[in-house]
Image (cartoon, rainbow, N blue to C red):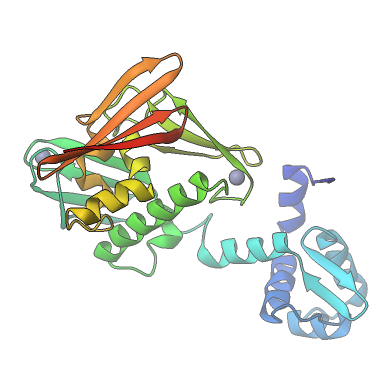
Length: 284
Ligand SMILES: [Zn+2]
Ligand SMILES: [Zn+2]
């Protein structure tokens, strides 16, 4: 397989023009159908056909492609249109702290959540503990109430980890690979966590052992056996996800980590070797 890419400054330079962004938007509106040169020029509203041809040449072949019936958007062109429409690079959204229904995993007090500079901040007013300080794109906050933003963040996180765990980067769809790292985000009170790295965009998804274990079918079955829906509540409410209280690092070389889920009079114990949950035992 070959891959020939534009250098990033060249790619952004080719897009730095209002007419070219209009061309991409019109091609997107055509929904996979090809649009002829003259039709496209009329839609964008450019009189000079030589000048319009120049703009199209700058968009080809990366953002728009030319076939027998006319022009069509490429996958990269579609991503540009979506990112611009969503305000991925330009949106500015914030909200002040409000009391959210989710609770502190240490003391069960309702958390206060605020959003600024594309970061969600979860704080416990009782134990003065910063539970989470995480990035969330402004495009996800624009058309939502603060409560809906928190819900969307919970789903977004769930799908990001699920994708990375299944080997698909949530940012660019490239292949991801997981390993144990001792570079742990500040919110996770553990000596190590699992990091999934993308071989294409170099993006990372970091998750605690407890956070990863709840995706495992054996752990989920254990919860259901105890009448607990593993999808209930928010991940930051579970001490297994952030506190380190139920996680034990048995060896750092090679990594061997155990995470426990006690329910009623039973304990479900998952053991990680590398980044995979290799065994799950239930102790009665
Ligand atoms: Zn608290
Ligand atoms: Zn990626």
